[in-house]
Length: 315
Length: 324
Image (cartoon, each protein chain N blue to C red):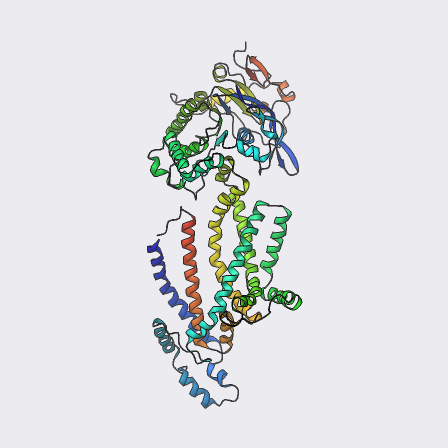
């Protein structure tokens, strides 16, 4: 297992290299340069050229990439063009919001998705199943921004239960109660993914329930609930665990929209703003970190897969 | 003493809004320490009968449409689900055709056997562990101490079927239902498993209902035989009586399909045609389209079971054999 994990970590390197190259090149395809955006419409061409030289943007693209890569390898993601701060600290300032948001979202997905999926599989064809399947379909197909706006309309504007935007740090006044700022955004993010997990758990449990070993379990005289959890769900979990990797990928892209709708100071919104500001180093840095995260999550999923299924051996 | 008494059991399958009969008017008894063989081609309803006795039809499209199943004097069909589960795996256990898929792939076999014990007995973990080792030894699994922690995929088909038997015997059942327990196994392993079941029966005094499509297996192991065709028992007798005086043309056909080891023949005497599907309506005797002895009356009148000898019943207008 440890050898496998180390091997997989090593394969991260070429993937990251390829990812960084693509990211770097694609960003420079976007028209407009940071110097003129920073200086505004009133700037003279001389001023723009001066700033470009200062930022190192007048060098050929290859040289810029090589310089950037050399710095990254030393742990330096560069300096933000807009904030004039190291990229790492810019990202760190958005990390608290994003990590809390992701954790809360995963919590909802597991808390709602797993039990509802199990119940709709056990009560296949009943009104509970029909209702949850319909609901899941609805949430899976509704765009996140639309759902977010409606949650704000109902729970913030209408009922006044939760704040509609922003997120003060947990270190600020209010402490842990500031988490209420993240309730609506995390629910928005969780809805389509929980819907996916519900459908997946239901489908794979129905698959497993037709297998011979389930009949063996029932022949022991076990209670149906025990058969459903210990024998059917436990086997269905193998297929479902693989989907959690994809869920993370979906979360990243949906977080960009959600953080914008709820004006959260997270990494998703940072990316959007950095693209508008042509803040190349920040965009590159964030995407690089997301790629690393994604690969680590997938490695964890594979390790979980192997520990869930004794037939899988990692080599 | 009668352990299992089945009377006029009818099973139906719901298909396209209508109920098609799959098993009709089955009756038989199993005494204590006795082995009953049920033989027939695929689709004759023998496995469904077994599942009905065991109580495993729930969740399938098959319903019990009539009749009774008495076990130790109690009608199982009248029991509440919780009462029924107390019988399943405790006094009545079942092993299945496919040892490769009948064990849960994610649990160690020791835990799977132990689960049946924990369900019905108050025992400590240590006691359960001891009992599982004892059971593995009983079914002649070599090196039980090591194999108790194996996963099913690490074992051979024969070993898995032994594990299934150990699991079935966990609570010393009165009745073991074995649905084609050797069909998926190599011939040499088949023999071992059948011998094992027989020796366990001698030791524990349990009764066995053995389901097979193989008349040779039945001949070797059973006290009584019920031959099934298309949901009905067409011949029912003690094994010795049946083999000395086969009366139903279908039984004769089954015997004729067995290849003899000492003869080199080009063609086997297979029964012509196939088992009709459920929705095919056949007038008269259901076997007449495939029967070598069919006459006009077979096409119009459905025969009833009649005794050709004491305790030897045949459902045929023109029983073969040396009727007395």
